[in-house]
Length: 133
Image (cartoon, rainbow, N blue to C red; front, side):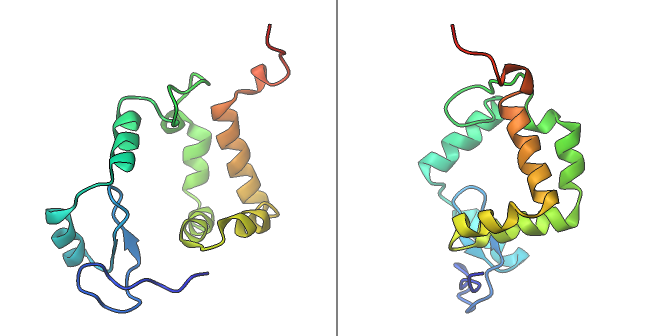
């Protein structure tokens, strides 16, 4: 796991535990978050993804093909209530080498259940074995 980054607001070394959802800037505390929020300029790509999500286009590249948005899945919501799964997801998000960590976590039944649930939302099982015409 990578060492914590310095805070982008106050400069405290190794203290940044949080990231801005609009621009991904690192910060360490609520006061620093408030200060950052006042001057935040989001990256255009991140802002477009946020706007698409707000408009109901949950997955990049167009509307959700599965007919169900991730936010509507009770199974996914239930899985995300698990603190262990949330910690695994945070660790992956903050990791330098996400690929090898994902391979490791795919050995964890809870993480596999989460991945399978996400895949069922993106591509429902009833469409799995149908060949295109």
